Image (cartoon, rainbow, N blue to C red; front, side, top):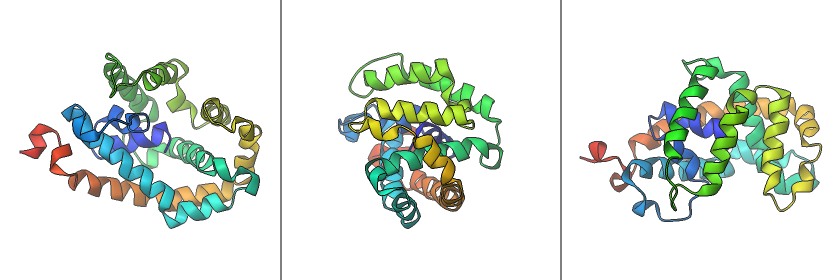
Length: 208
């Protein structure tokens, strides 16, 4: 998923916000990670797996033009972050600006060290995220363009992202319907996973 979604799911499941993002950038074993990060890293994997295999998301990705098949997941994730930001008050008790500030502060604390579980590419991205206020921007057309440009940067087929914002605009009904149907399920799964995390991935106070 994209950044706002992972942060939101981490918060509602009371797991480590930064770890839920870091899972997309870490290849080292979760079992060797600092204990406070393990549950969030594991949860990241579970969320990503469901998002790529669920019937609703597979159906949505199949609706994108054939020439965009290789970036269909990216487009779906950007659209989901957009709708989460747009309808934010339906999914979280804090206003989005207040939640964003909280997230930025926790991510800044995470960025205080660099190692294989605090990878530099993610730390650089976190700095950009806060400076340009990505989380609040997702609700706007400009924020969508910014998110697509960010994904295109390191994608081997970056040229495919040109004009992708127009594709998402044309597919508004399909993407919004999928989000509104799938996301409540994803929230429920995330809360369940947080209670069924393998004991060796739990913070010490929960593992006892």
